Length: 334
Image (cartoon, rainbow, N blue to C red):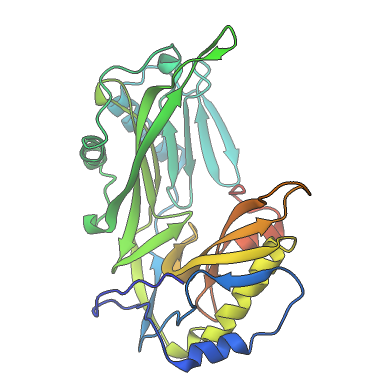
């Protein structure tokens, strides 16, 4: 298991326990019929701390149709979008504005949380060839931050905002059965969140900024709630044996036909469900190995990852709950 030491000041700490307690918990796990499960490195303790912290979103006012239109107009002005957004649909609390002039132009905002997606449109980027004046991978994060600052979309605590990666949109053309080399159309900056030294993962706590010709702003996705901390009693945290058992159960359910499952890492993170709850969880990354065809020398490897709530009385809405219900009200499958 990958264990990451953090500073002593953090409210939640992932600690390496080399004592026999964790090994004993692993030994006591009930045996199951199915693939062999092993750790890439020896499994060790998950969480230990005198106090833990979870977070709740600070309540915000519901976004009205008029307010949503005002936010859209500000984004249109920032991106120089001339097309009209006359279409409006209401789906599960979301207000979705569309344009007849460009099907890729959209403004989709959750009226309860303010989470939104804005795309000014890709009509001007449909021609062959690379986009002129794209920012470099080094320049893009600072340019993206400047746009967020002008739009007042930076978080209150800017130290929480971190660059996860810089990517983008690439296209290629096919002529006479041959595919051209890909050319870059947009550069995208992916911002994530760190709270008290722990990475935040999940549907919330992310901002994406799309940059185009001459570093112009093309689109923004913002799912970010200001939060307030709530201390948790240590008795509400799952023991190692319960976490191990849940890891096993989830792996058997997700990859029961595999020959072997190798757990690469199990990292303590904060999970943001996008619904106002940010709480400690274990992010498990594994590889499921399957038998190949009879004569094949090598089998097939499929990556697997999921979250295990670290709290006994978890309040977050995790992907596995969504899978069980088959549909997330007001959202979509990931």
